[in-house]
Structure formats: C-alpha cells, structure tokens
Figure 1 (cartoon, one colour):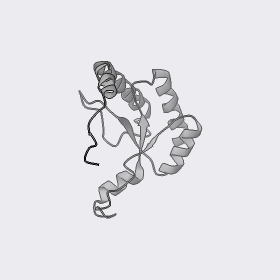
Figure 2 (cartoon, rainbow, N blue to C red):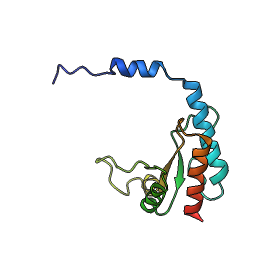
Figure 3 (tube, rainbow, N blue to C red):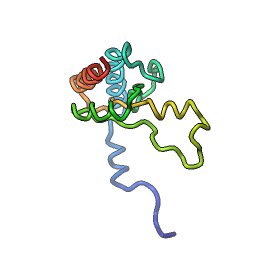
Figure 4 (cartoon, one colour):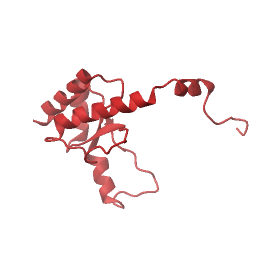
Length: 132
C-alpha cells in the first residue's frame, strides 16, 4: 500500500488545463441568477443573494419535504442533490441544530455550466409547479 502514488493523473491535469474557467464562472452565475429571478418569491436561496465573484456550485433551495421534492423533480427530469446529507460520525445529531436544520431542509438545484437558459427555465418551472 505504501507504493500507491497519490495525486492527479496526467489525464486529469490535461482536462483541467483545457477548461475555460471564466466562461464556467459566467455560466454558473447566469444560471443561478435565472433561478433566483424566478424562484426568490417562493424559494429564496438559504444563502441569500449571490455575492460578486462567487461561482455557485448549486442553488440552495429550502423545502419542507426534501425526499418528496427530490422524487417529484426527478420525475420531471430535474436531478437534484440532497444537501450535506451525511453527518460526520464524530458529530452527534442536535450538537449543531442550525446545521441539522440545513441538512433536513436544503435541496441543491443544478446551476452547472452545461445548462442552457432553457434548461434552467425548465428547472424553475418544475420547482414552481412543485411549490404552488
């Protein structure tokens, strides 16, 4: 086991070198703002408005029934992520109630750079349908 070399492969380095990072940031921010413009009245992000320069990983949507929301959105073709679902074994439930609440209520909506504005509109309309 001590002979295992840790680190990124040459292929991973090649992929990283060939990314258009400014375009990725711009598209993710665009997608986040498109969701924000459509959903802020029903599902404002738990983090508030996106700050200048921040490249979002997802739109953090609060929901009361996360499992149900995930299932209903997936049925409409919207893949979501169960935000921070697994607690570290050293941390007991209730030790950080604010974190527990986030684990129970936050759903990650996609904003990745490969989504077009039409894709984001589909996500937003599915969420609005879910919440109204």
